[in-house]
Amino acid sequence: MPIPPFIVHKACNIAEIHLLNLPPGWGVHCSESGYMDEQGFVALSEHFAANCGPVRPQYLLMDGYWSHLIAKALKLLFDQQLFVFILKSQDSERDQVFPSRM
View 1 (tube, rainbow, N blue to C red):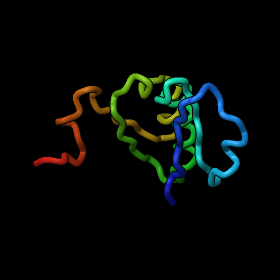
View 2 (view 1 turned 90 degrees about the vertical axis):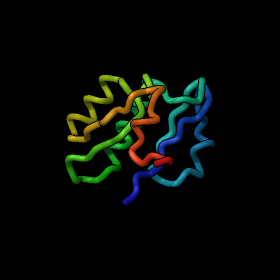
View 3 (view 1 turned 90 degrees about the horizontal axis):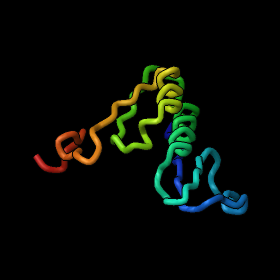
């Protein structure tokens, strides 16, 4: 079963009316910039852990953006045997799993 989407929305807060028509299981986080932040990554980690199924271990590939290096979120994932591989930030040309050019 696919993992429901997790949306990061640019806003200071989200009114309940904005969530009324979302399909069940979708995760939503808002940040002032519209980009992932520390609280959002913790929420995303909880969302992923709750929806990725019972098979363990599982592996998650991510870029090395600073908000993906939050100890609380990484520990939450590790404790559930969800292992994170972090690719080097700002220089992923040689680190692509499926490079677009050969």
